[in-house]
Length: 168
Image 1: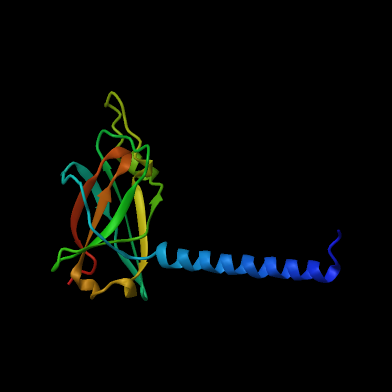
Image 2: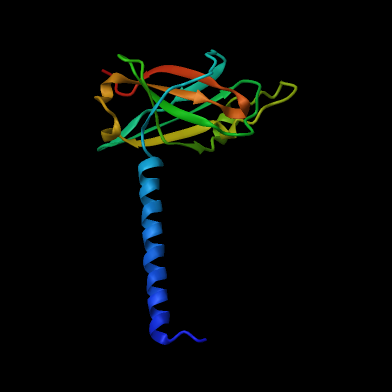
């Protein structure tokens, strides 16, 4: 039994409308989950001073802030990148997780290269960048210090940098 041209048009239209609805729902979920500042409770972490890090100058362009830097443990090449930039409210101690991405930093490997060492380490994956909208924060930006969770290569270390988001 063949389907007539009118019924075919209805099925195509139904398929397109359904597909568009599913796509819109998916985009909405991404919008509200990815790229957002979220409350965060660090758990099961170590607090070690063995993490070498630098926080580059923090940039603000209107409501958008950018924090970038690098971090690594001396004597460990970074094979898997997993760092989350955090903000810590200095009054309440609450943490907020920022959307964080890896930034290749071959300059870090070059800077820490030691020609006399028996072996050297690859810190190219030590760089990270966090970009966020300050309007997503619950209180004024002057109340936050930069922190990060260092989870590269199986570590789980909370690092409080002491660097304020905005110097007062």
